[in-house]
Amino acid sequence: MNQGIVSLMKFLKPYILIKDPKEVLKEYRQLRNEIDARCTQLHREHKNHTQCRKGCSGCCMDFRLLPVEFHYILNQIINKRVEVNLVHEKGECVFLVNDTCSIYEHRPVICRSHGLPILFTDEKFNNLSLTFCPLNFKDVPDDYFSLENSYDQDTYNQKLFSINQSFIKTFQDEQYAEKQMIEMSRLVGCLG
Ligand code: SF4
Image 1 (cartoon, rainbow, N blue to C red):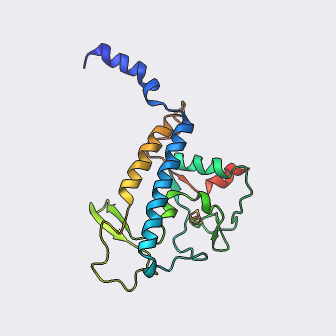
Image 2: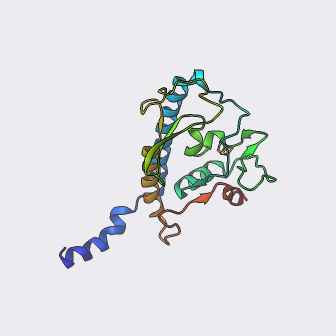
Image 3: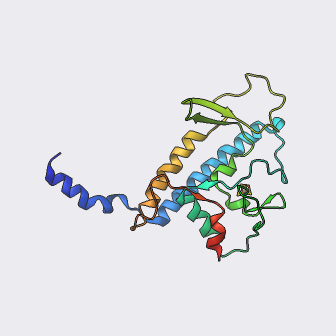
């Protein structure tokens, strides 16, 4: 490429790529709504084979979040009274209080597909795999699951990753690395 064009692109890069963080957080919210709609549809479809209910917390753990999600949730809960479990064991979610999620409305994307059949690429074997909660789907035939009735985790994660890339570029001091993730429990330290 012409050296002059390369220099011009370097000069323009910040102006082309850096978005308003509020816009990026709005994109995250739209994606979350899309995921909620898909999960609601799948829960309806599988309702005869699932036992998910309030008080069942087998899927909960201290998940790691991309910065865009960490900051979105922080913005939602920072001025609210949020119950946290300060005596949780390592790896347990701090927002699981008496087997109930204290930030349910604002819970991250990964928690929204709890209980559903999840399709994902197994990076070790590089093939498409399916996972589901052992309490659910006890009585389904072997050919019950399909691409159409499972949650396509890879597609949604790719969208989330792309939104996160835009988000981390809004920090001028390059605060976050490309693949950096943050334990959800660190939200508590930011609540003051
Ligand atoms: S945020 Fe809520 S749903 Fe997600 S792991 Fe924690 S307690 Fe469970």
